[in-house]
Amino acid sequence: MKATFNLQAQDAAAIGEAAKAHALAKGWAVSIAVVDAGGFPLWIQRLDGAAPLSSHMAPAKARTAALVRKETKVYEEMVNNGRTAFLSAPVLEGMLEGGVPILHDGECLGAVGVSGVKSAEDAEIARAGIATLKFPG
Image (cartoon, rainbow, N blue to C red; front, side, top):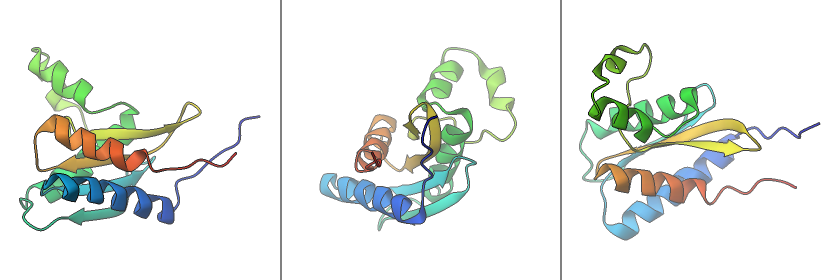
């Protein structure tokens, strides 16, 4: 039987702080959100200089990534390639690159969403945060 790992508040804070450190090291003003597997916020911060809209986009990207268990880049590419009907999908508001799921042993534990710089840079920040998570065992 597979051991279960649940994302805890301290994990979310560590992921968020690592993502924040990465963004600050690059000089990027962004908002960062960490959510659980259901898309509920565990940690969020808008860095100095980040656009106010980014504080809405980051949790939306994180929620979408957690609920669909895929990077939000997939949905941005679908829409850009002409599948605009996907914009009407219920609940999925953050369909731009920058939402990255937190996966472990085939399970989605949550996700990180970042908004404020170029989409690929948003995703880079999210991945940097996730990379700090250490799983037991």
